[in-house]
Image (cartoon, rainbow, N blue to C red; front, top):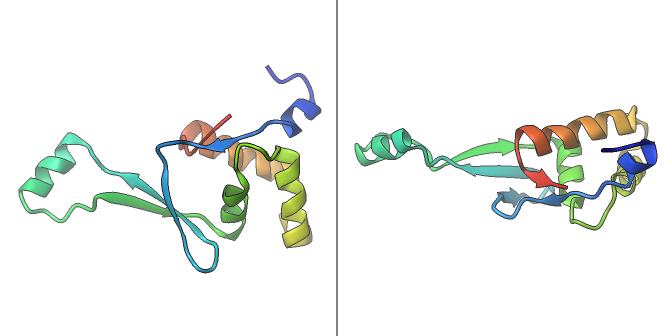
Length: 113
């Protein structure tokens, strides 16, 4: 359980082992989620055009955060580099950053603690 703000800022995340993603020339991250449901496989065998991957592109800020998640940088380190790169456009910094990290951890399972 996190006791105070220092604990939150010292959290370290890493990208999930089984996550596939692409980075384009503009450093925009596209998450590739394999679609392997039984019904999808059945329809593919019946020659329906069901894509193998669901592609989710992150925006400029989300991509910047995602590319910094390496299992070594803390939330505070990531926040400081966001401010250095984007300035006041990322304010309120830690509220937005923690909301994004929580979403891609809990809901999407793209990262782990």
